[in-house]
Image 1 (cartoon, helix red, strand yellow):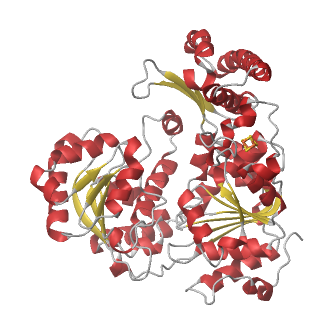
Image 2 (image 1 turned 90 degrees about the vertical axis):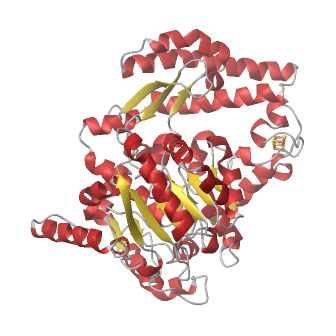
Image 3 (image 1 turned 180 degrees about the horizontal axis):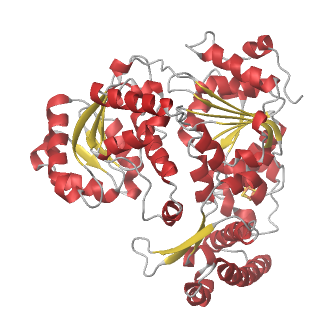
Length: 558
Ligand code: SF4
């Protein structure tokens, strides 16, 4: 059996002096599953339960383990945690380390890339390779989900290998991370200007996937030739930093393109021409539609056993199907566990109905003024002097709201908004203030806005998947509406969880978008009980009635 750990042994590995509510029961339940032949445990537990300590306990009990997550903030929290931070060797991608021989270059474009014969003893001198050697020899490795997936593809030296256990924490969107990570951008920056110029016209005429594969395969010959040429040139004359960067980009492109060219027959890919801001012409993006085939090749081979955790698995059936669990595990090798109760009382985290109208593209013009008045009332009357976050879901809507707010309110309440390039800067500014309002986009995940950092949130727009995204339209053409509403609910519950992080935190969650009611009626089956209990009475009643009716009809309710 690949797991044989007694409960006593396991509990001795728990890092904290005492258990939080539900922690011990959950540890024992997961252990029971693993001891009886389950190879994939997926568990859902609300914020505040202390998932990191549960996951770290299993990493300690395994022979070798990965602890991985898509969220950098969680990695930083674990590293800083005095009870588990020292348990792991930590490793990230090369671009996060500075070359020991050139403080202006990352390891990705370090001196050895520019001078191939440069005498550097990498295991001793290079910060990246030193970290890699430590990780290689360490039984427990903490790393990003991206590195976990790509390490084996991009380099073979000191390969961290297949481990006994892989924990993937905050895993609710790993399917999206996988399809994003394997998307291929064909642009003057990724394939170099001359190659782009030569191939863009043929690429534009492509009409089928096979034709696209053919053209990219031909283009790859030019790219490989250019890579070899640059490496030869570097032997005579060192490359500049810019050239080293180009070389790295060409190598990265090659490795991604190979995944596309070698993808199995049944794997669906889609492509679109998209014009980024300030680009003079559209670029090509080639994307896998589903993650399930990618996990089969790149994720499951990394460990014998998996523990996958999040506060928002919601529908384990949809989740397991999206990540292709059925392609790697037999039915009796998979277990799903849900902790139904939140350690945070619902009265500390109420959801409040402030709906004014739908914020869909069609209807927002009509309702944006009403939405702005509602926001003004919340920030100046109900939440005066407190930090408030407004989730907008798109920059376009964020701008509309900002423009619709009165100048007086903007001045007196310090209303902050950001662009894609000022996200972190404006977030830090807001977190450092009190009584400020943060109009934000795509901050539903990975934020720890506890205490006074954020005492109220406003949901201006339900984060439905973007219909302009070709992957979304490809799925909806097949009537995959369950997935569509499932993802929207996941986004809402993730946003909801940002501001109440401890039993003492209190934060209200105001809903302005009327489409929230559509979501309730489409996604009621997957709502966790700790979310339902925070809904206002009229919505809670409606959800409970729908669940009861569905149950009577034999429909499965989670
Ligand atoms: S291996 Fe040496 S030369 Fe190369 S990036 Fe690392 S420190 Fe710099």
